[in-house]
Length: 213
Length: 98
Image (cartoon, rainbow over all chains, first blue to last red; front, side):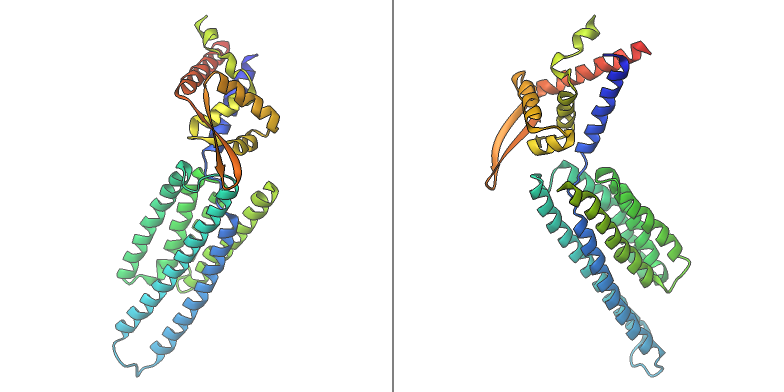
């Protein structure tokens, strides 16, 4: 063997260590489902905001305006929470199914690493969003959630199929654009969490899962 | 001389090197995973895992997942030590020839 053969060996070793230590059972289908939930959630939120404008334009509203705004905000948070929970539960179920099919454990070291690295930016963003709401800065909530979600995807991409980082980049850019269009947050939200997820999940499903069969 | 001694004959094959690489960073891997990661045939993989098992560098466990038999492999402490030595020797050889 020549030294270039040895070098090739080392490269191959590195490649295999990398490839085998990432959590690759993430289901593309769960991305599509998450996108659909997000769009449905956006539709409900749109209804809620529609009601809000109707009532706020009414000069003879009983009770305080701020109490009403609080109620709307609460409803919006509930919608967001339901969407998030549904997306996570579906994600876990579908990933579990895929992992079982591949004969892998759903919760191995790679999954744990993936989860921790995904959650660090996401939880930070979640807390920051709650603070924005607390301070009444509703206008920047959509951008903030999109940006932090994007960062979470980029961070997690090192521990799963690398393609996730493109979903992350797309959401970060969208989030930054959304800062310039305060008041249209819901539409950006629907694009980022809804349409991007559906496109990304669909691509993953076609690229990785169908070819695997 | 010592460098040559550390080049381990048991690893002197692309597929064996691959099996060990995967088992170094993963607690264990099953037959199918190894096969897919290394893109080799069943028979080819089986003969190489057997060779590594014989020198006790890897451990083989057979079990059932549902009704399907499942064979999983893990690196033994001996295998890990020997593999590290082998890689260090490879790196030294590369450095020397540069």
